[in-house]
Amino acid sequence: MARQTASGFTISGLLDRNAATRSGYPVEEIPVEEIADHPANAVYSMDEAGIEQLARSIEEEGLTDLPLVRKLDDGSWQMVSGHRRKAAYALLAKKDAKYSRIPCRIIRGITDEQSVMLLHAANYFVRSLTVTERAAASRALGVEVERMRAENPELAGVRTEDIKAAIISEQTGRKVSGKTIQRQESLARKIEEMLVPAWREAALSDELSADAVGILAKLSAEEQERLHGEWHAKSLGKKETTDFLRRSTSKPEPDGERERTAPKPAVPLASALRALRRYESKAKNPPNALDAEALGEIAETARRLLRSR
Image 1 (cartoon, rainbow, N blue to C red):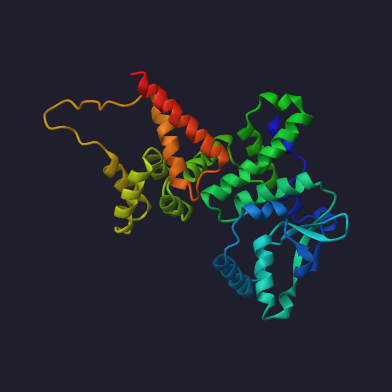
Image 2: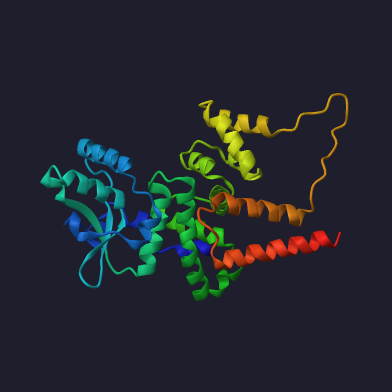
């Protein structure tokens, strides 16, 4: 059902080479400066080094994949898929005027919502994304999923990640499962919410495996910082990093004795403590009024509990 609902509007259909597509979605050279970026592309990285590398590739090999643009109601152009290619052309145009115009495939008659869906679905596969960017692409489709549910009550019982997978598969012609999307979004949440900045940067640089992220997410901020200091001095690869974290966090077996379970606080308190530590590790400024009020209530609750002993 989700797959059927997402069909009928595909990037793979737009980019096939039959005569109908060539006439329906013509190619036109458009001045680079006249193409506006899509607002929804703001969640993706446009790092200068990557753009420079892409510009060199275009200069040597040409533009092998045409950007997709649409014409807005006011007659202006808006990029749908190809922001990095446009940026590379703009960079090349500074030294060679022949790059001041970029060949684009033009799509007409799509809504704002469809353009957003196309952008995120295309970015899911065609770019080298960080874990969090790829998750951002699939999360952004959540708005489209809710719109589809509102229009089609039969989707009420279909899992969100399965509908997202159907959209991405239909828009790109490439398979992805709902479980893969769910796993990637969960991993991104751990990186964003549970890792200290130093380890978060390592994860976004593709230096950590999913297993390594899972190990770190269970540790306190202080323990993460300690391990990062040791890891940083070792220059380990991704697999070696995972092994290092496993060894560093495993509990040694006591000699000749059955290992005794260390006493632990109640689960709700342990969870609350981890949440407070995460908040503390990310806080760059004094708490705002609402946060300060919440912290005061937490402190007062703790005092009441301690007095009742």
